[in-house]
Length: 410
Image (cartoon, rainbow, N blue to C red; front, side):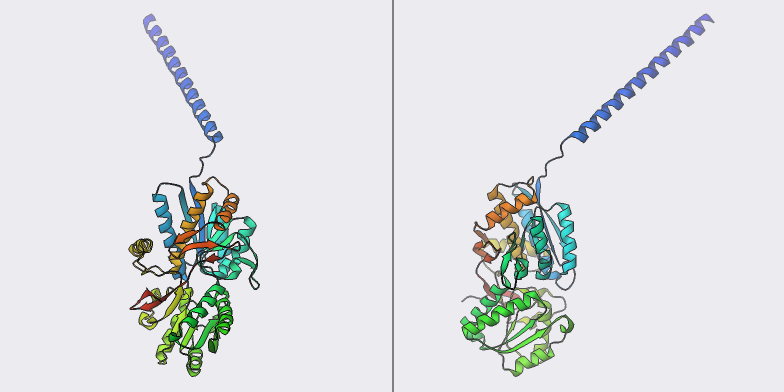
């Protein structure tokens, strides 16, 4: 009996000892976890490794061909640069549906994300809506294709008061108008009597036309008809076609986007009217327009900085990658976007920037680089930029033959 009590007491003491040890261990473990949590909370956050580039454009709606091309080409450029193993980049591209209000919302999303540089917007009206925001927030932007002066100037009517930190990879509207008149003057074989059909409520279209008309007068070109349209009547071009034909126009100049241009070409064919049609970069994309008979665009001339059939290695490699991804030939918008990414990367490297720099630091450094550097890309050699953000490069003429863009050799 005595031995039994002794055994029970010993067992109890052992259990107590084990319990105490267990509690001590738990307490020790808890203290260690708390210490680890506190240490983690006090640790400095990891430094960012990728530079954030934002941008917006129409991925839905009537201008989606443009935005989609820009997004895909920019992604290709980012992937190529990242694969080299140097400074890494991250791209975030928002859909603005070619709508100024949606572009403002997209800008807010990108700013909250922490973009350090931007492709701004793809089209001009959204670009004009957010340009002042880039200035106020001191964020550098370079648009692939927003060609209106309102994208880079606070006073676009007088080309005055540039924002200073919004640049263009594309030609400005005035430059396109002047270059188009100069090209037609130098190629009288295309025709001598010119009709113009433009969209009078659109900065892009009306801006190009104004400079074209002034330059045409300087060059002695004869404009026999000026036809306009706006959003309310952009589906029926019977009157414009009939008046162009009645005026004897053998050249029809279309400083407009590809969607209305496709309707004009369709109506002209139905009327048996076959002048030389001549357009600018806004018509680039017409061959990819769903439901459009591309044979109606045969012989159309475009003044553009990019020809997908060029034989240089840079163009061939880009076209091959773009086709592999999309099954389509890249347009000028895609080429300009590709150049934007590489131009930003060149400026970043030259300035010695990395992902730790603030958007404001990026802005100052990139403005300094862009206004002093020379850049070679898909859309031009020896490109330079003025302090206003306008690019200087040579335009190229292409003609649509057998359903593809073909460079015109002078």
